[in-house]
Length: 450
Image (cartoon, rainbow, N blue to C red):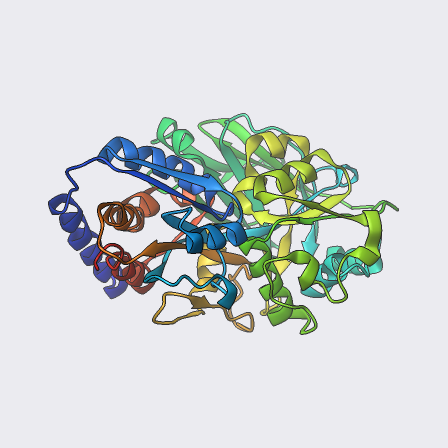
């Protein structure tokens, strides 16, 4: 076990003993809300927390902007946000951030004419699409990205194992990586079974891994571009990949953005400004992020509130593209409609899929300040495994000493030390580990401490 792992285990043991010894006798009703980015993670976490500890903690998905405003006014006892609190929303009472989980933001699209192919997009092309200068799907910039990175299509529209998905990444012209992800219930029901990377052409198993405790499994193998490959879990096929020639349609691009004030938007705009185009503005409102605003684009740009509605709109609309936490895109119901997540070219020149491992690699290059906020580095020119677009999501809690605030402290400590490490990857998120997790725990202890 390496030193980092030993430190993390030590933090886990210490925190577990604190939680067991500091149980709160009286059941409390605690109301929170805010960011929609972490809802796919928070919903099962809150249900398990309430069941385990006997409280009635609730969370309303409103978007980060409303969450921050309601926290300041006292409407929410605690809040969630994926972006820093601005001067207009600073509370007058004592409070703190708590970083507790992260996640990749997928550039999500539906384009039926691709036949299940995964788009590869460079930062410049993403800037053109969301900045309004790339208007058609057959734009030369998109065509050039596809030529740069050979296109593989998942020709199986619906996985035979509900809750299991596979993403493909090219490493070179002769090698690739497949990431298999399973929801918690799927992981549990398939424990002990084999994940197989099967060459349908040669009738050989290239790689085989036994399902254990990890919900996200990466496999790398040498490949032939002429072969077809099936990814199987317990003998059932979850995806079938084949390299295909793509003909992009002469179809208008429908850009779908967050209509509400959103931390997901803020992080998307941080990426656009920091990694692509300095003319972008960092803001919770997409309409204010885009250079020159969006009104000039008319009906080609449409807003939808919250990650859930935005992802639904994309899944229901052929020719649409947007951005949302990856769990909303890999959701089986939406995936069956044809929504896909693009692979994005990072600063090292590699096209990377929005996996927990890829985003964790990117996070490792960031810097965390004393408030717990993590500043990203999009210029990691030698890190070929980094997926560069995502967010860390933060809790906001009051530091004054009362019973409800102590419940909030207990909740965030428990998520960082127990629920997150066990379940984040299975739910489509990236758990915070090591020093970042330790900082989160230390900040959580300030909730209700007085």
